[in-house]
Length: 217
Image (cartoon, rainbow, N blue to C red; front, side, top):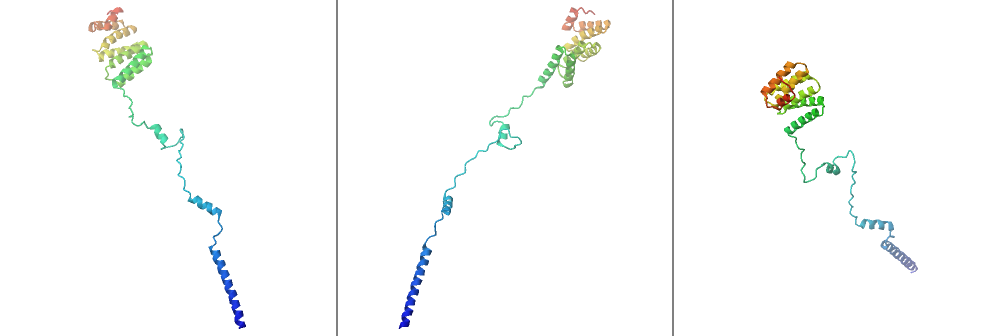
């Protein structure tokens, strides 16, 4: 009887301890862990929406060298849209001939005989079939005459009359050929050319000029 009393007391004590231990485990398992402020801040940051990326305008140096394919380079060289590039006007052949001839004649009239002679030679080489070729040949002879090269001038003047006998400059060439002979001291040859001038081109300005100067055959 005493044995069962002690045994019962021990059993009661063990049951109480188990209950206490069970209650402590239950309360420990149900109690939430202390709140971490750092983790909470990270979670809040992750939960917030990401702001949209702002558009950044790239700055292009206006005078950057070595850059290829940039929009700035293309816009600088490309023509405006909607406008066709106009080609450079072409110079016609006649305008080029007229310009070259006038430049050479202008040099002669400015007493730049050497320069004018070279320009007339260049003109005849470039435009041998031009209508102005007889004039250019005649004025080349005048350049030589102006420089006192009467023998050379005589040769070119006679070339004018031989190559272009029906051209108006043929009469002028006859007159100046006679004057070149006179400068060289050959009076007979000079008179012969005056006679041909008056007979073949009686109404020409050169014939009128020769008579006015008293150049008799």
